[in-house]
Image (cartoon, rainbow, N blue to C red; front, top):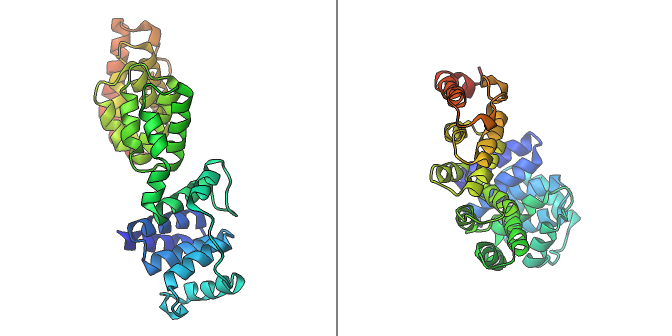
Length: 295
């Protein structure tokens, strides 16, 4: 798997999509931390984004004191020679915990987004990265913690996505009395880990607040796989869930769904309202192939 991510990083760098190349190379290094090709591709992307210290660090890790000829292509060898000449000595690297906190405060490095910095930290030392967020995981999961503290912890988890974040977030979505902002952040965490997990969670009977937060988050994904889950929610007993489902569906399929924008949620549970929802479900059954293919 790391080879595929490394080749993707190379392709993206050649297309000068350096942020995407960095993300792909970082995933490759996460899967195989000592991979020479992956580290070199990450160094190349970092240099292109003006993070010369980071690039030099990655090139030196890839070479492990060896010659430039170890690198797999003239492109990487030439870039490594340029970078290592610019940064001739291995500079001390900022402590991992400090790098994490700096990124969480929104401080970027050169042209590297904070999300990429956090991913690099996670790939370089998975155990220390997870340990850094142990307190956040505990606070976010604790129903007895102050709501503001839980929200702050969940927002940190949403930004960094350490191991265990999605498990905690799914448990929060199942809490009947959790506050709206916390639920929204929890849904974001699950989406970031795997949208399929949120879809499957929505197939269970979440509490009203959790279901509404999940529905709103589903609408932001652009994933049509959520339509089958959202349509039945238009008949949910809770007005907040019905509204979230309508908003999410409109975000996903827009005015292609006949009558969706005009659906009067206040008319629930009248026969006219149910008929309108049945018409929407029939339209989706009939037209989903064309919608999914973009026709």
